[in-house]
Image (cartoon, rainbow, N blue to C red; front, top):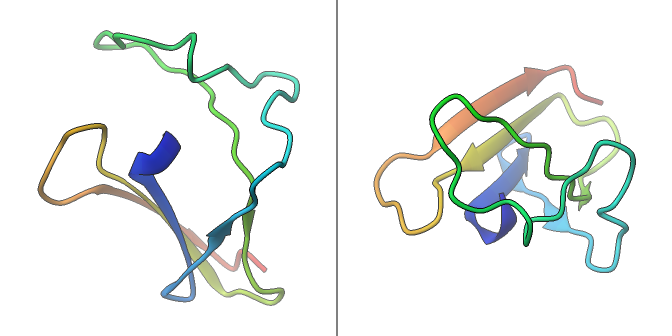
Length: 79
C-alpha cells in the first residue's frame, strides 16, 4: 500500500502513525514485495490514527503510478 493508500474516518482523512511497528505477525516488508502477479495477495501493515467513536472507515488505494479512480473498501460501525 505504502504512499498510495489513504484512510478516511467519517469522511475525514486519518493520519499515518510514523514510527509504528510494521513487522507484526503475518506482515510483509514492502521492500520484499515486488512485481505482484495476477492472483497473488500480500499483507502490508500500517498504523493510522482515527478518532474514537468513528462510524465508518474507508481505505482508498490507487496503486503505484496509477491514475483515475482508486479502489475503495468501506467498513461501517468501525468505532
